[in-house]
Image 1 (cartoon, rainbow, N blue to C red):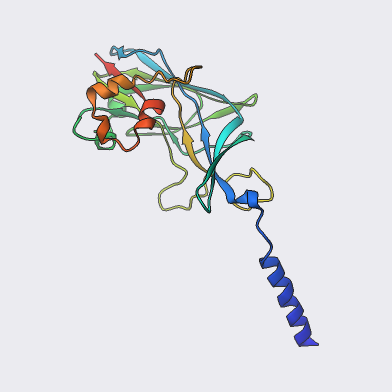
Image 2: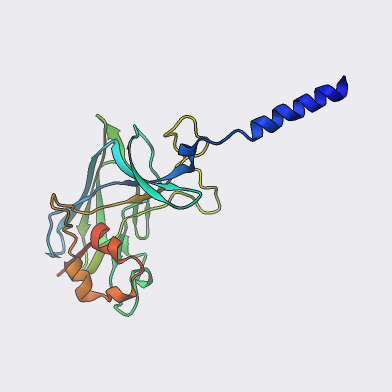
Length: 234
């Protein structure tokens, strides 16, 4: 009798382990967009001018979803209310060496070149390349508005980044529940389209980047064209 119970229990456990994972749960890695307005839109600024960085976007996203088994991509409309996207950085890099790509530029000069005005949104910490922030959620929209007062001349690029982890920690910061039947879903990346126009173009001053840097050295030139803002301070 005891053996029969053990065999029955084993069959039950085997049937549970063989239960098919919902196909939709294979699509569990999400990329969202956080559109950014940088203004006033100019090529050249003066010391003492303020550049504003603002976000106001709905909690209904046209997300890109990746199949974590085969890498296929698809689009999906997702409503995500009051989610704590992090970690987000408003990074500004000083372009000083055209023989190197953007990752080889001088870093750690943000606080010496800009004074920040934190108007809407939460400042988490000020770092050498710019502030880490948290969006404010209200009335079904996410909001941010930071100003940067220019202190020094030079060539600069606003290059926002997103990290879904802390060093030496598991990638659990942006675990999200989109489909209740799925165990693990993750926000993998945030993209930051800058000054995107109704005709699909971007007012990012990319021509200035071409003028002062060497685009052939870049690994992701599309991001620089669409998600960065290059400017000169005279």
